[in-house]
Length: 198
Image 1 (cartoon, rainbow, N blue to C red):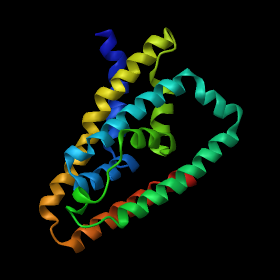
Image 2: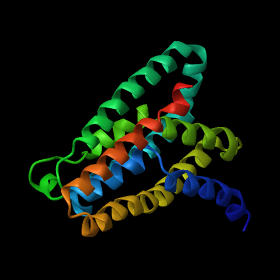
Image 3: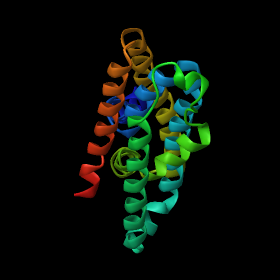
């Protein structure tokens, strides 16, 4: 019971952070629409694996490096903005539904995992967990438990966004409707950059 009371708030935080719109979920909805669920699985696994790795590495002290050399954090932010704008461009100019199944390529596991390091929402989520939810007593053991909880909560939650994109495929048969959807997702992705920039 004590363990449940200790980890339930963190699991709830991860659930709320994972299910709300952000760069990962916007891209997964677009991937589900354009490539289908099965071809988007490496993307989903990469997001979860990347978040788990990020939590572990930051928990071991990378956050302290950024405190010591803030310029590294600024450089990371700049790279993030450029990369997110590039992804928004790719989403906005995706082909019609079904074209992706033959021509395009969804994110690979490695690409999705690496993206977490330039994803402002992932940084906020992971740093929040380390600062607030991981007990400092027996920190290494608690960090490993937190990493496991991250994967258990994050993967099913983000999968819902991929399923959302797949479900939209049934209704979006008109290429114009697909274009509007992809452009909307691209704009949402650009808007998700705003909090980080300001």
